[in-house]
Length: 358
Image (cartoon, rainbow, N blue to C red; front, side, top):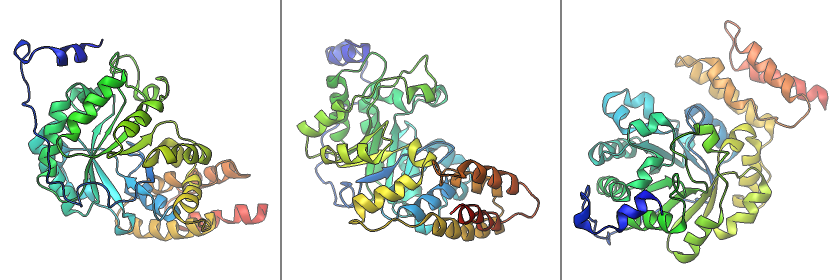
């Protein structure tokens, strides 16, 4: 039995009650249940990847998937440049804002800002295991404090009308049994939350890097599947290790949606194919050439506003992954994108490499 489970089973007088027990919320509005958004296909929040430029590109590829921002901390929003942190293009809808934090009041303020800026959902990060995140008392370490997470979720739900959801792991360290996971979920559910995005690995809070935490702990899809089976009223989205269309097709019938992570970034055309197959009733995905041309127009608009070309181009490097000339194409974008005065024409000129190969 893990330490956190043992503490949870002690009589209340035997431990300091950090947070009072929450009464179940019964006045869940339709806009807060999470049912209004199509969650069958989602792209995970990824630090240093899913910025506004990446999301714009992914939307060109996938008109119907649900996109998530990089995690933005509530603390940063209380002191930083809100427009820089929250600004996005209207074409990104539907798009969710992922927040990090554990202070209910700060998270409530951040949620209000997110709703005011037009986001379609607020998501709380309870899955990131990095040391930096833990030092701020948020991320995966919060799975050890389900009552605090419930307080945070309630605080946000009380001030916004858009859905408020949780992204979590299936456990932490030696707390990796189903009972620990279910206890966490049901405690948060009692705060009125019904949508859980579950990375089907536990997190090691010590000894593994964030990258290793995405790869070393074994995938246990059966854990969130059991949660969905026992609690069909919950919306459960499967995340972790999904890399192929076949996997998405295999697991989607058992869940309310699937969420792709690094694979959607490294092979973004996979997202276009899944969108067309799963959400588009068999419609053909957009051609890679059309995506490049539309993204080139976006690049030109962003350059006018002071954005740097290399940072805009890096997100599209994987568009031709696995195809002939893909490596030469990436090299062309990198080299030409660093030249003085370079613009979206770098992308337009790059198309010749594939027309010639054809």
